[in-house]
Amino acid sequence: QQQVKQSPQSLIVQKGGIPIINCAYENTAFDYFPWYQQFPGKGPALLIAIRPDVSEKKEGRFTISFNKSAKQFSLHIMDSQPGDSATYFCAAREGKLTFGTGTRLTIIP
Amino acid sequence: DVKVTQSSRYLVKRTGEKVFLECVQDMDHENMFWYRQDPGLGLRLIYFSYDVKMKEKGDIPEGYSVSREKKERFSLILESASTNQTSMYLCASSSRTEAFFGQGTRLTVV
Image (cartoon, each protein chain N blue to C red):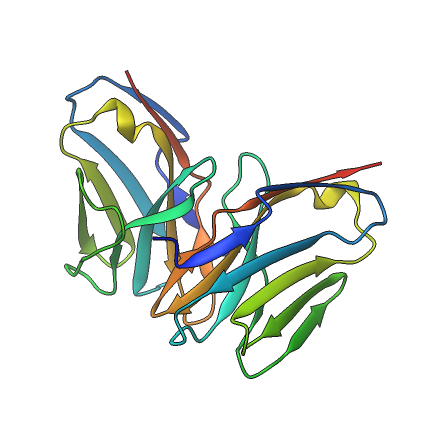
């Protein structure tokens, strides 16, 4: 049973486009929603995170949108660059982190 | 610079062998975790520990055990390795707001 559902599994976007990765959850006890970025050969690293009392958070070109009533949150990458090509994981925390299945993002020049 | 160090990047073991994966963190975190990463399945939690000598089962503990004798070290043990345990294994330690991952150990069981 997947507690955090992530989509799409893979995504190809042209440079400058805005890739959007979506996650949905059921457990209303989750209190913290981070996104992790993983490059090949590396472990995941924290990219940006949001708490459920906030509807949007921006850090540079990365934005999380959070819809508490729909139990959904998404990652948007503005002005995407080839260097953003990586696997992205959403996660949700109730004590420990539960991860989504990951999205392999490719930004083509 | 914070660090989570896994002892091996690549391992090849035979079916039935006992396998030890070691993880050390230098951030004085109480929380440590072992995940396995498989394509299309994301990161799945095997075991975690909130304190020395304390362990909790995650979502997929079958076939694994763990040991935490010191705060900075968390070991994953495959008692009798099987081919379906071929995977990427990731160790993490966490503060309240952030998990820090090691680079992973790619284990192949033949």
